[in-house]
Amino acid sequence: MHAPLYTMSAGDLGVAPEEIEKKLSEILEMATRWKAVLLLDEADVFLEQRTLKDLERNKLVSIFLRILEYYEGILFLTTNRVQTFDTAFQSRIHITINYPELTSGPRRVVWSTFLTASNAPHSITDAQINQLAELPMNGRQIKNVIKTALLLAARNDVPLNRGHIESVLTITQGIEA
Image 1 (cartoon, rainbow, N blue to C red):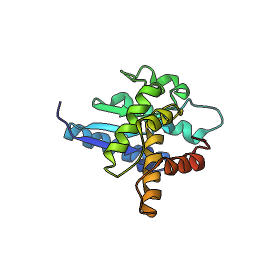
Image 2 (cartoon, rainbow, N blue to C red):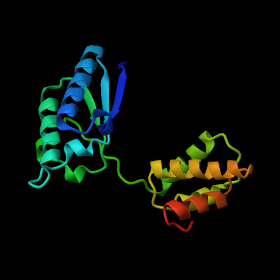
Image 3 (cartoon, helix red, strand yellow):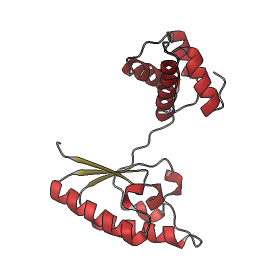
Image 4 (cartoon, one colour):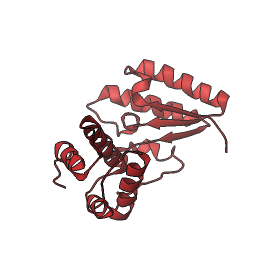
């Protein structure tokens, strides 16, 4: 399948329910014309269970449900809060893909991949990568730690080392590596 990908986040659609409805309708119409695949990143605000206390968010959920009901294209929604979904979405979502927490094996691959992809000189050993892989982190957290540690190393004009990673982990995660 070859199709354009249109990526958006909830923040791209605005804050007022009327504004969101207008922009979302325009985007879905455009995606239909282009035969594009849509990706709505961090869709949590639209998917959350409606409550008696938050009427504005309830409007957003209702608008999204109504628009989604009639959309015939392909739409990917990302969220890490599946447990808070409004039950009305269950009949409107055709496929759900769950990504479980990474175990140490896949985390090791993520650490190695991001270190290699950085093309930066480093002195991180396989044994150190194995130790880092034991830390309970997801891929995004690992990527951010490496990026920040690389900035520290570049600031000091030295190759990336375990100390840079430890500093970032201590500051950002409260983890003693």
